[in-house]
Image (cartoon, one colour):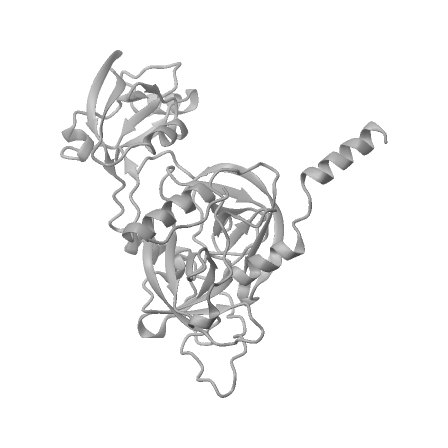
Length: 395
Protein backbone atom coordinates (compact mmCIF):
# COMPACT_ATOMS: atom_id res chain seq x y z
CA UNK A 1 0.00 0.00 0.00
CA UNK A 2 1.32 3.41 -0.92
CA UNK A 3 1.70 6.04 1.76
CA UNK A 4 2.27 9.78 1.85
CA UNK A 5 5.31 11.38 3.41
CA UNK A 6 4.51 13.78 6.19
CA UNK A 7 6.52 16.72 7.65
CA UNK A 8 5.51 16.61 9.47
CA UNK A 9 22.48 47.58 16.97
CA UNK A 10 19.58 49.61 18.46
CA UNK A 11 16.45 47.95 19.72
CA UNK A 12 14.80 48.85 16.41
CA UNK A 13 17.57 47.24 14.38
CA UNK A 14 17.47 44.14 16.55
CA UNK A 15 13.71 43.92 16.02
CA UNK A 16 14.14 44.24 12.24
CA UNK A 17 16.78 41.53 12.20
CA UNK A 18 14.60 39.21 14.25
CA UNK A 19 11.60 39.67 11.99
CA UNK A 20 13.76 39.11 8.90
CA UNK A 21 15.17 35.87 10.23
CA UNK A 22 11.76 34.65 11.45
CA UNK A 23 10.11 35.14 8.05
CA UNK A 24 12.95 34.39 5.68
CA UNK A 25 12.30 34.51 1.94
CA UNK A 26 11.38 31.10 0.56
CA UNK A 27 14.51 29.82 -1.24
CA UNK A 28 14.49 29.77 -5.03
CA UNK A 29 15.48 26.10 -5.12
CA UNK A 30 12.47 25.28 -2.94
CA UNK A 31 10.15 27.07 -5.35
CA UNK A 32 11.78 25.38 -8.34
CA UNK A 33 11.18 21.95 -6.81
CA UNK A 34 7.56 22.85 -6.08
CA UNK A 35 7.11 24.02 -9.67
CA UNK A 36 8.46 20.71 -10.96
CA UNK A 37 5.92 18.90 -8.75
CA UNK A 38 3.09 21.11 -10.02
CA UNK A 39 0.99 19.76 -12.89
CA UNK A 40 -1.56 21.16 -15.26
CA UNK A 41 -4.79 19.14 -15.28
CA UNK A 42 -6.83 19.30 -18.49
CA UNK A 43 -10.28 17.70 -18.24
CA UNK A 44 -12.62 16.59 -21.00
CA UNK A 45 -16.30 15.96 -20.35
CA UNK A 46 -19.47 15.32 -22.33
CA UNK A 47 -20.07 17.19 -25.60
CA UNK A 48 -16.46 18.36 -25.69
CA UNK A 49 -16.93 20.39 -22.52
CA UNK A 50 -13.90 20.73 -20.29
CA UNK A 51 -11.28 23.01 -18.92
CA UNK A 52 -8.16 23.11 -16.86
CA UNK A 53 -6.86 23.44 -13.34
CA UNK A 54 -3.77 22.80 -11.27
CA UNK A 55 -2.55 19.81 -9.29
CA UNK A 56 0.48 18.70 -7.28
CA UNK A 57 2.34 15.38 -7.17
CA UNK A 58 2.46 13.93 -3.64
CA UNK A 59 4.13 10.58 -4.29
CA UNK A 60 7.06 9.59 -6.56
CA UNK A 61 4.86 6.98 -8.26
CA UNK A 62 2.65 9.73 -9.73
CA UNK A 63 -0.13 10.19 -7.20
CA UNK A 64 -1.36 13.77 -7.39
CA UNK A 65 -3.96 15.97 -5.73
CA UNK A 66 -6.26 18.53 -7.28
CA UNK A 67 -9.66 20.05 -6.50
CA UNK A 68 -12.70 17.88 -7.05
CA UNK A 69 -14.36 20.67 -9.02
CA UNK A 70 -11.48 20.58 -11.53
CA UNK A 71 -12.30 16.97 -12.51
CA UNK A 72 -16.06 17.14 -11.87
CA UNK A 73 -17.85 14.95 -14.48
CA UNK A 74 -14.60 14.55 -16.44
CA UNK A 75 -14.50 11.65 -18.93
CA UNK A 76 -10.75 11.84 -19.51
CA UNK A 77 -7.78 13.69 -18.03
CA UNK A 78 -4.53 14.90 -19.54
CA UNK A 79 -1.60 15.94 -17.39
CA UNK A 80 1.17 18.36 -18.40
CA UNK A 81 4.44 18.74 -16.48
CA UNK A 82 6.76 21.73 -16.06
CA UNK A 83 9.40 20.53 -18.50
CA UNK A 84 10.50 22.77 -21.41
CA UNK A 85 11.91 19.66 -23.13
CA UNK A 86 8.72 17.60 -22.88
CA UNK A 87 5.54 19.09 -24.31
CA UNK A 88 3.68 15.77 -24.24
CA UNK A 89 0.69 15.12 -22.03
CA UNK A 90 0.02 12.00 -19.98
CA UNK A 91 -3.27 10.33 -19.05
CA UNK A 92 -4.47 10.10 -15.46
CA UNK A 93 -7.08 8.08 -13.61
CA UNK A 94 -9.22 9.27 -10.72
CA UNK A 95 -8.22 7.19 -7.69
CA UNK A 96 -10.53 8.79 -5.16
CA UNK A 97 -12.73 11.80 -4.51
CA UNK A 98 -13.64 13.93 -1.51
CA UNK A 99 -16.37 16.34 -2.65
CA UNK A 100 -16.92 17.49 0.95
CA UNK A 101 -13.40 18.98 1.07
CA UNK A 102 -13.26 19.62 -2.71
CA UNK A 103 -10.34 17.23 -3.25
CA UNK A 104 -9.55 14.49 -5.76
CA UNK A 105 -6.65 12.03 -5.97
CA UNK A 106 -5.22 11.15 -9.38
CA UNK A 107 -2.81 8.49 -10.60
CA UNK A 108 -0.72 9.83 -13.49
CA UNK A 109 0.34 7.26 -16.08
CA UNK A 110 3.91 8.11 -17.06
CA UNK A 111 6.75 6.20 -18.68
CA UNK A 112 8.89 4.07 -16.40
CA UNK A 113 11.98 6.10 -17.28
CA UNK A 114 10.29 9.22 -15.81
CA UNK A 115 10.04 7.68 -12.34
CA UNK A 116 10.49 8.65 -9.61
CA UNK A 117 8.62 11.92 -10.10
CA UNK A 118 9.40 15.05 -8.12
CA UNK A 119 6.83 15.34 -5.35
CA UNK A 120 5.99 17.42 -2.28
CA UNK A 121 5.20 16.35 1.28
CA UNK A 122 2.03 17.42 3.07
CA UNK A 123 2.39 19.39 6.31
CA UNK A 124 -0.33 18.12 8.70
CA UNK A 125 0.34 20.17 11.84
CA UNK A 126 2.12 23.54 11.59
CA UNK A 127 0.03 26.44 10.27
CA UNK A 128 1.33 29.80 11.48
CA UNK A 129 -0.35 33.19 11.23
CA UNK A 130 1.90 35.51 9.20
CA UNK A 131 3.93 32.65 7.76
CA UNK A 132 5.22 33.31 4.27
CA UNK A 133 3.70 31.03 1.62
CA UNK A 134 3.90 30.58 -2.14
CA UNK A 135 1.15 29.47 -4.54
CA UNK A 136 1.94 27.87 -7.89
CA UNK A 137 -0.67 27.41 -10.60
CA UNK A 138 -2.07 28.38 -13.96
CA UNK A 139 -4.10 31.49 -13.24
CA UNK A 140 -6.00 32.83 -16.23
CA UNK A 141 -4.04 30.49 -18.50
CA UNK A 142 -0.62 31.77 -17.40
CA UNK A 143 0.93 28.38 -16.72
CA UNK A 144 3.13 27.74 -13.68
CA UNK A 145 2.81 31.24 -12.27
CA UNK A 146 4.36 31.76 -8.84
CA UNK A 147 2.83 34.20 -6.32
CA UNK A 148 3.77 34.97 -2.75
CA UNK A 149 1.83 35.97 0.34
CA UNK A 150 1.24 35.18 3.99
CA UNK A 151 -1.22 33.10 5.96
CA UNK A 152 -3.89 35.49 7.28
CA UNK A 153 -6.05 33.03 9.22
CA UNK A 154 -5.81 29.33 10.00
CA UNK A 155 -9.37 28.41 10.96
CA UNK A 156 -11.98 29.45 8.42
CA UNK A 157 -14.89 27.01 8.03
CA UNK A 158 -15.29 25.02 4.84
CA UNK A 159 -17.89 25.93 2.26
CA UNK A 160 -19.89 22.74 2.78
CA UNK A 161 -19.23 21.93 6.44
CA UNK A 162 -17.33 23.55 9.33
CA UNK A 163 -15.60 20.19 9.82
CA UNK A 164 -13.26 21.24 6.98
CA UNK A 165 -10.64 23.80 8.01
CA UNK A 166 -9.60 26.44 5.49
CA UNK A 167 -6.50 28.66 5.44
CA UNK A 168 -7.00 32.27 4.42
CA UNK A 169 -3.94 33.71 2.69
CA UNK A 170 -2.79 36.59 0.49
CA UNK A 171 -0.84 34.79 -2.27
CA UNK A 172 -2.56 35.83 -5.48
CA UNK A 173 -4.63 33.08 -7.12
CA UNK A 174 -7.29 33.17 -9.80
CA UNK A 175 -9.16 30.95 -12.23
CA UNK A 176 -6.85 28.10 -13.14
CA UNK A 177 -5.14 27.96 -9.73
CA UNK A 178 -7.74 25.52 -8.41
CA UNK A 179 -6.08 22.41 -6.98
CA UNK A 180 -2.59 23.88 -6.78
CA UNK A 181 -0.32 23.72 -3.75
CA UNK A 182 0.23 26.43 -1.17
CA UNK A 183 3.74 25.78 0.18
CA UNK A 184 5.72 26.99 3.19
CA UNK A 185 9.42 27.84 3.43
CA UNK A 186 10.26 24.14 3.87
CA UNK A 187 8.60 23.43 0.54
CA UNK A 188 5.81 21.39 2.11
CA UNK A 189 2.12 21.63 1.20
CA UNK A 190 0.24 23.58 3.88
CA UNK A 191 -2.89 23.82 1.77
CA UNK A 192 -4.57 23.12 -1.57
CA UNK A 193 -5.92 26.29 -3.15
CA UNK A 194 -9.64 26.08 -3.77
CA UNK A 195 -11.43 29.45 -4.10
CA UNK A 196 -11.26 33.23 -3.77
CA UNK A 197 -13.53 35.80 -2.20
CA UNK A 198 -15.07 37.21 -5.37
CA UNK A 199 -18.17 35.45 -6.72
CA UNK A 200 -17.45 36.23 -10.37
CA UNK A 201 -13.72 35.47 -10.21
CA UNK A 202 -10.86 37.93 -10.19
CA UNK A 203 -8.42 38.87 -7.46
CA UNK A 204 -9.78 40.40 -4.26
CA UNK A 205 -6.69 39.97 -2.09
CA UNK A 206 -8.30 37.12 -0.13
CA UNK A 207 -7.67 33.50 -1.06
CA UNK A 208 -8.54 30.17 0.53
CA UNK A 209 -6.80 26.80 0.69
CA UNK A 210 -7.89 23.51 2.24
CA UNK A 211 -5.68 23.16 5.32
CA UNK A 212 -2.89 20.59 5.28
CA UNK A 213 -4.25 18.39 8.05
CA UNK A 214 -7.52 17.95 6.16
CA UNK A 215 -5.59 17.35 2.94
CA UNK A 216 -3.37 14.71 4.56
CA UNK A 217 -6.27 12.85 6.16
CA UNK A 218 -8.32 12.90 2.96
CA UNK A 219 -5.40 11.72 0.82
CA UNK A 220 -4.70 8.78 3.12
CA UNK A 221 -8.34 7.68 3.03
CA UNK A 222 -8.58 8.07 -0.75
CA UNK A 223 -5.48 5.90 -1.16
CA UNK A 224 -6.94 3.23 1.11
CA UNK A 225 -10.60 3.20 0.08
CA UNK A 226 -11.16 5.69 -2.75
CA UNK A 227 -13.48 7.84 -0.65
CA UNK A 228 -13.46 9.88 2.54
CA UNK A 229 -15.83 9.70 5.49
CA UNK A 230 -16.46 12.53 7.93
CA UNK A 231 -17.91 11.48 11.26
CA UNK A 232 -20.87 13.67 12.14
CA UNK A 233 -23.94 14.07 14.31
CA UNK A 234 -25.96 15.09 11.25
CA UNK A 235 -27.55 17.90 13.22
CA UNK A 236 -28.28 21.45 12.17
CA UNK A 237 -26.38 23.37 14.85
CA UNK A 238 -26.01 27.09 15.53
CA UNK A 239 -23.51 28.63 17.91
CA UNK A 240 -25.19 30.26 20.90
CA UNK A 241 -24.28 33.88 21.67
CA UNK A 242 -26.19 36.95 22.79
CA UNK A 243 -26.80 38.18 19.23
CA UNK A 244 -28.13 34.84 18.02
CA UNK A 245 -30.32 34.48 21.12
CA UNK A 246 -31.78 37.95 20.62
CA UNK A 247 -32.74 37.20 17.01
CA UNK A 248 -34.03 33.78 17.99
CA UNK A 249 -36.30 35.19 20.72
CA UNK A 250 -37.75 37.71 18.27
CA UNK A 251 -38.64 34.89 15.88
CA UNK A 252 -39.72 32.35 18.51
CA UNK A 253 -41.00 34.39 21.49
CA UNK A 254 -42.67 31.37 23.13
CA UNK A 255 -39.63 29.11 23.05
CA UNK A 256 -37.94 28.38 26.37
CA UNK A 257 -34.22 28.63 25.64
CA UNK A 258 -31.33 29.34 28.02
CA UNK A 259 -29.63 32.74 27.92
CA UNK A 260 -26.22 33.91 29.01
CA UNK A 261 -24.50 30.65 28.00
CA UNK A 262 -22.54 29.21 25.11
CA UNK A 263 -23.32 25.93 23.40
CA UNK A 264 -24.93 24.84 20.13
CA UNK A 265 -28.66 25.00 19.43
CA UNK A 266 -30.31 22.26 17.36
CA UNK A 267 -32.50 23.57 14.54
CA UNK A 268 -34.35 22.42 11.42
CA UNK A 269 -35.11 18.86 12.53
CA UNK A 270 -38.12 17.29 10.86
CA UNK A 271 -40.09 14.25 11.96
CA UNK A 272 -38.36 11.07 10.86
CA UNK A 273 -34.94 12.69 10.47
CA UNK A 274 -31.89 10.83 11.77
CA UNK A 275 -31.57 12.90 15.00
CA UNK A 276 -35.34 12.84 15.59
CA UNK A 277 -35.24 9.04 15.70
CA UNK A 278 -32.56 9.27 18.42
CA UNK A 279 -34.54 11.62 20.64
CA UNK A 280 -33.12 15.02 19.71
CA UNK A 281 -35.60 17.90 19.39
CA UNK A 282 -35.52 21.35 17.87
CA UNK A 283 -34.11 24.03 20.22
CA UNK A 284 -32.13 21.51 22.30
CA UNK A 285 -28.79 23.06 23.28
CA UNK A 286 -25.77 20.74 23.15
CA UNK A 287 -23.17 21.63 25.80
CA UNK A 288 -21.07 18.45 26.14
CA UNK A 289 -20.00 15.58 23.88
CA UNK A 290 -19.13 12.30 25.60
CA UNK A 291 -18.13 14.12 28.78
CA UNK A 292 -16.16 16.88 27.01
CA UNK A 293 -17.52 20.47 27.07
CA UNK A 294 -18.34 21.91 23.65
CA UNK A 295 -19.07 25.63 23.68
CA UNK A 296 -19.10 26.07 19.90
CA UNK A 297 -18.64 24.18 16.65
CA UNK A 298 -14.86 24.44 16.51
CA UNK A 299 -14.58 22.51 19.78
CA UNK A 300 -17.05 19.91 18.50
CA UNK A 301 -15.00 19.50 15.33
CA UNK A 302 -11.86 18.92 17.38
CA UNK A 303 -13.38 16.18 19.56
CA UNK A 304 -15.50 14.36 16.98
CA UNK A 305 -12.54 13.66 14.68
CA UNK A 306 -11.38 11.00 17.17
CA UNK A 307 -14.59 8.99 16.62
CA UNK A 308 -15.94 6.86 13.79
CA UNK A 309 -19.41 6.48 12.27
CA UNK A 310 -21.34 3.96 14.36
CA UNK A 311 -19.71 4.93 17.67
CA UNK A 312 -22.16 5.70 20.46
CA UNK A 313 -21.62 8.79 22.59
CA UNK A 314 -23.44 10.64 25.36
CA UNK A 315 -24.69 14.13 24.61
CA UNK A 316 -25.42 16.55 27.45
CA UNK A 317 -28.15 18.96 26.39
CA UNK A 318 -30.35 21.64 27.89
CA UNK A 319 -34.08 21.22 27.18
CA UNK A 320 -36.79 23.28 28.85
CA UNK A 321 -34.28 24.55 31.44
CA UNK A 322 -33.24 21.00 32.40
CA UNK A 323 -29.94 19.22 31.82
CA UNK A 324 -30.51 15.79 30.29
CA UNK A 325 -28.31 13.16 28.62
CA UNK A 326 -29.04 11.33 25.38
CA UNK A 327 -27.22 8.28 24.01
CA UNK A 328 -26.47 9.08 20.38
CA UNK A 329 -25.06 6.97 17.56
CA UNK A 330 -22.69 8.90 15.32
CA UNK A 331 -23.04 8.77 11.56
CA UNK A 332 -21.26 10.36 8.59
CA UNK A 333 -21.83 13.54 6.61
CA UNK A 334 -24.47 12.87 3.97
CA UNK A 335 -23.51 14.65 0.76
CA UNK A 336 -25.19 12.40 -1.77
CA UNK A 337 -26.24 15.34 -3.94
CA UNK A 338 -22.68 16.62 -4.46
CA UNK A 339 -22.84 16.30 -8.26
CA UNK A 340 -25.84 18.64 -8.45
CA UNK A 341 -24.14 20.97 -5.94
CA UNK A 342 -21.02 21.26 -8.11
CA UNK A 343 -23.06 21.52 -11.31
CA UNK A 344 -24.75 24.61 -9.92
CA UNK A 345 -21.60 26.06 -8.36
CA UNK A 346 -19.69 25.85 -11.64
CA UNK A 347 -22.63 27.08 -13.74
CA UNK A 348 -23.01 30.15 -11.51
CA UNK A 349 -19.43 31.13 -12.38
CA UNK A 350 -20.20 31.66 -16.05
CA UNK A 351 -23.03 34.18 -16.17
CA UNK A 352 -20.36 36.68 -17.25
CA UNK A 353 -17.66 34.38 -18.64
CA UNK A 354 -14.29 36.00 -19.41
CA UNK A 355 -12.42 35.46 -22.65
CA UNK A 356 -10.46 32.23 -22.89
CA UNK A 357 -6.66 32.43 -22.45
CA UNK A 358 -4.33 31.24 -25.27
CA UNK A 359 -3.53 27.55 -25.51
CA UNK A 360 -0.04 26.24 -24.64
CA UNK A 361 2.32 25.29 -27.44
CA UNK A 362 1.87 21.80 -28.88
CA UNK A 363 4.45 20.28 -31.32
CA UNK A 364 3.31 20.43 -34.96
CA UNK A 365 3.80 16.70 -35.49
CA UNK A 366 1.74 15.84 -32.44
CA UNK A 367 -2.02 15.57 -32.64
CA UNK A 368 -3.58 18.43 -30.74
CA UNK A 369 -5.77 17.26 -27.84
CA UNK A 370 -9.48 17.86 -28.19
CA UNK A 371 -9.33 19.75 -24.91
CA UNK A 372 -6.12 21.57 -24.13
CA UNK A 373 -5.31 23.39 -20.89
CA UNK A 374 -6.91 26.45 -22.47
CA UNK A 375 -9.69 25.39 -24.89
CA UNK A 376 -10.43 27.71 -27.80
CA UNK A 377 -14.08 26.80 -28.09
CA UNK A 378 -16.66 28.34 -25.82
CA UNK A 379 -16.68 25.62 -23.17
CA UNK A 380 -16.84 26.20 -19.42
CA UNK A 381 -13.63 26.04 -17.40
CA UNK A 382 -13.93 24.72 -13.85
CA UNK A 383 -13.02 27.62 -11.59
CA UNK A 384 -12.75 28.24 -7.87
CA UNK A 385 -16.09 27.80 -6.15
CA UNK A 386 -17.46 31.18 -5.05
CA UNK A 387 -17.43 31.44 -1.28
CA UNK A 388 -20.67 31.96 0.58
CA UNK A 389 -21.19 33.59 3.92
CA UNK A 390 -20.09 30.86 6.33
CA UNK A 391 -22.90 29.60 8.50
CA UNK A 392 -22.69 27.48 11.59
CA UNK A 393 -24.67 24.54 10.31
CA UNK A 394 -23.14 21.13 10.86
CA UNK A 395 -23.80 18.95 7.82
